[in-house]
Amino acid sequence: MRVLVTADTVGGVWTYARELVAGLIRHGVQVTLVSFGEIPTPRQSAWMEGLHGLDFRPTAFRLEWMQESQKDVEQSTRFLEAVIREVRPDLLHLNQYCYGTLAADLPRVVVAHSDVVSWWIAVHGEEPPLSPWLRWYRQVVSRGLRAATAVIAPSRWMLNMLREIYGRLPQSAVIYNGRSPRLFNPHMTKTEAVLAVGRLWDCAKQVSLLTQYPQALPVWIAGSELHPEEALRGESGLAATARVELKGMLPEKQLRLLYTRAAIYAATSRYEPFGLAPLEAAMSRCALVANDIPSFRELWGDAAVYFRTNDGADLAEKIQWLAADPAFRRACALRAYRRALQLFNAERMVDDYLQLYCSLVGAEVLAA
Image 1 (cartoon, helix red, strand yellow):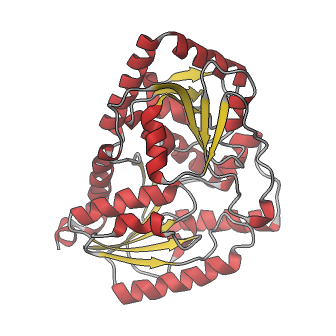
Image 2 (tube, rainbow, N blue to C red):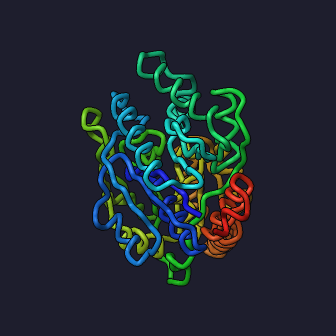
């Protein structure tokens, strides 16, 4: 079986695609991977070495959620259609909405990782103001969803938001994202410190909550300070203090070391359809203190400590509580670790997608 997978190199979709593609190839699936956004760096593409059966096509076309991306979407659509005619895949696995309408008579899985409108609602409490670009974007998303054979979301919350914003969907389901536990070390002695990972420019990540009140433990914040759109770049609004250290954008190896060392992970996002960083922290046996939003409640249940929604003072109190009770903190970390292994491992995710593919193309094609 051959599957064409699209991805972008700007955010967590690239990590998701890495786990998916590597898992599919281990199961004997041939994969054509087409990336958008930016050409991946050598570090970003190092995981492809030794993956037999992978056909990688990197591009720098702008993504549908970026301003003034209409021409790029048109051009990238034509590019994808040419690739499809060349490689003749059995199924399309599309991680952008706009390609749901590709001119190809093939089953198409459209995965909803996030969405501009749901992001705006979560951050601002209301729908975004109308503009020519937003009207175009909403049309693109609506058409892509309607043309999909199956729509997949990484949480029930995200799937419900799609229905509320865009109306009735075709066949749809939730497949939780997954990470490979072998990539993380849960056995090292922990340092009395709090870690947060998030784009400093993204108010939805709101890592600034950790700087609003004095913290009981040192705080490490890792993440990009530069918006991917140059015109929107500015100051992040965060500054290092005596107890807050800004680590910047780190290579994967250094970030994993921080997960290994930190005793607590602060999941501060107000918008998080899934959240790979909290998962990576849980697989590193960090105790999770999470913003009380529906998606975190869905994903982590009683395996996290929750602070009042978007409340920096309560976040500081919860960190103080975990700092003062090491035994409870270790118990919380163990619950998060076990839940991560059970629900959010990469092998389970790949198996779920293979079952979906089988339902769409037939077991005989999957086995071919």
